[in-house]
Length: 317
Image 1 (spheres, rainbow, N blue to C red):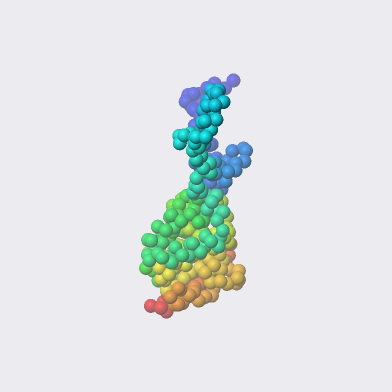
Image 2 (image 1 turned 120 degrees about the horizontal axis):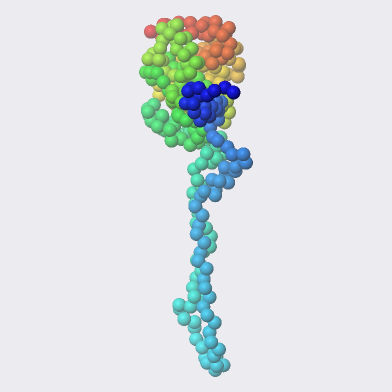
């Protein structure tokens, strides 16, 4: 039998269990798990309705005691008289209809809103914003997109809003959701190196996404989510007023330029992007840094695109 050493005697098995539990939770957070579920399914819509305040039941009336038997003559004389005004049976009974109540503001209600109505509401609100700070404040309180309720943070923008060039990606990832700024993970590091290759950094560029909240599990945003968030990024572009726009990846390119081509066919071209005041700026389509991390051989194409961006910036000086 192995003798117990002093190290074994001082070792706490609970520490290993705690470390394993923390690693287990970290794995699920990185995988996009945002809520813990029980073994049995839950009807969240029904729970929202059950949590709403219910009207109190009306108190039951106690009937008065039966009157004592009376003589026939006395009963006939009293029948001719009107009943007293305080007779409980002559009072008007209160309405038993429950009072109207406002629907609870829950994730289910926001996610179940009609996409067209939510997009129209977003467009009307975004058009009223006169500054980027106002637009960011509006987004922090906007409840028309269900992604707001699953993301940790709003990822609005990073860099210099007065810069000549604006980069627009698709949606935040786990690192961006945790920090609250776009392009903070490995793809952001690659974007920084790509900008540095043409003499740019985040002080000379403005960076945002078409969807400002992270989709659960880093999935692609749905067309409905993109349609709801599109008025905000369009207003953000108008307020930043860049000279050049760079669409990173197919979703940003298709959303902002209207092209249906895939990114490998659309990249390397300038598209006209029309602002609300009628002016047009150039929008360059290129590959997303996350795609380049998966397909490093395509970096040569991105380098060609960034050389085009450099030439356009130099020509506009």
